[in-house]
Image (cartoon, rainbow, N blue to C red; front, side):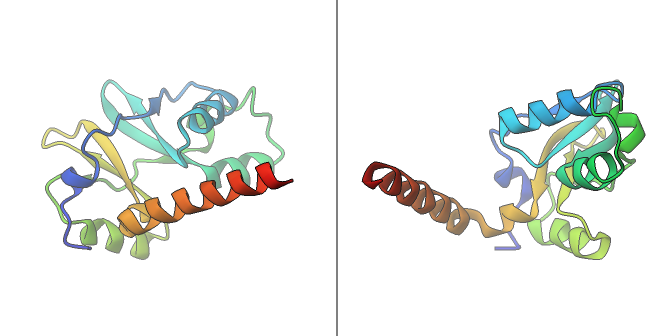
Length: 145
């Protein structure tokens, strides 16, 4: 599993990003719409930061900041560690363990963003099947009630 190549994992993935001047509320709305836990903050096709659910919780909500006035530049993790799409997933997982984070932006050979790999990707098909099973269970419970 850790030997899977990142380019295969992110194949078909769309880069979800926002500019550094976007508000936290707009970023959170985008993340909710796309059902993702992190988005890239991009300027001139270069990654300048990453904004995650943890940032929203720990910096914005716990920090009592106004999500309509706070920009991503104020709360993002600037200059995050990135990884090339040609590397094995194990490299990204090691970055996550060492750095204490759950997402690693993926870049091409020119440094342009091409996707994001997450700790969740390590679970692969097992996680996909579990999510399907949970949705099916929820559907059954809703129809029984």
